[in-house]
Length: 75
Figure 1 (cartoon, one colour):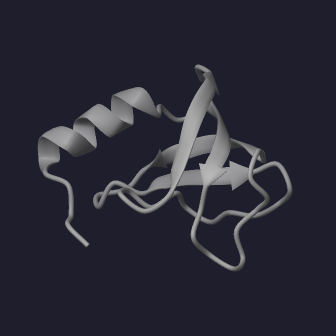
Figure 2: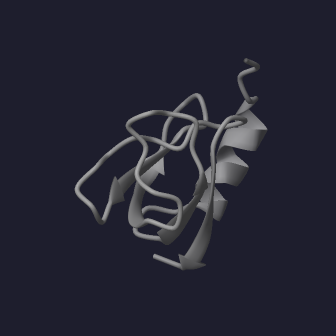
């Protein structure tokens, strides 16, 4: 797994600001919420993972380069 550089981290933070609403597209984890689950972005960490509070109560992060989600409403 390659870690993103500082510029990419800043771009991810602009694209996924805290408070934005997202929908899960894909997550490779047996504990993942179902595809299509909505959540609220809490932030982007220093390795590019999008920290999400999922509406189903979960809190697994969307891992950069492995998982995916998309913004449905700006925060």
